[in-house]
Image 1 (cartoon, rainbow, N blue to C red):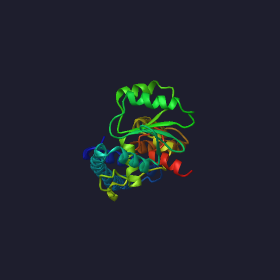
Image 2 (image 1 turned 90 degrees about the vertical axis):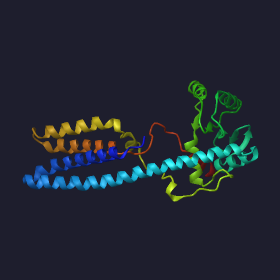
Image 3 (image 1 turned 135 degrees about the vertical axis):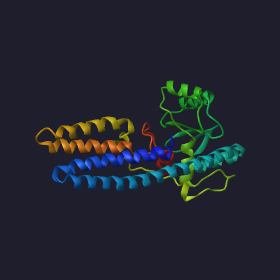
Image 4 (image 1 turned 30 degrees about the vertical axis):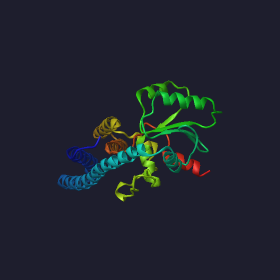
Length: 276
């Protein structure tokens, strides 16, 4: 979901306020001048808010650009309907680095692919591909690539004893952009504004810091900081309380990655074969 500007404004203020509070806790411990502490924290709050809001607004604008990207991807997939069979096979061959072995079935050194980008795959497609796979030696996995999948297809996929992976239009379009390969009846579209910035350096740890974890980290950090006011050796409580509050702040940032799937991107899948 794309945030509106008010949501961006509110999130930026709340994050700035939380960071300023952490700063105040540590500053007031060593500096007894209350006016200086308040003045410093308010100044930090303002500076942080401006910086975070501007950065968040840029991301907000980038997401708006991505909506235009979606429109062009729709043009790409609609154009595939007008390709004849040979043109379609050639396009698949160039984009996925594959060769055809059967109707809609392609292969490379690492995988079998059932590819149809002209329509959604149905239960009939699943049965055809599954039967083909059962007749192979099963040394290579089978992967479905389409613009989408019907509910009947997904029902069969969910009860299959074979671990089939699926890739949809967004994955295919990302691959088109990375390889700069588009349907032959469309002029190549290579605008830097639409380059997808793959973030391959994010760790599982960062991906696990989702917004639904914010409450736990925030309450834990706040509790430790509050307890530190009343007990000796409070420095340890302040340290760990600060760590938890920082983690809660990270949870609020949109890391723009859906972490529920561990599968490789199509680009990684294709490169894996090309490197052999």
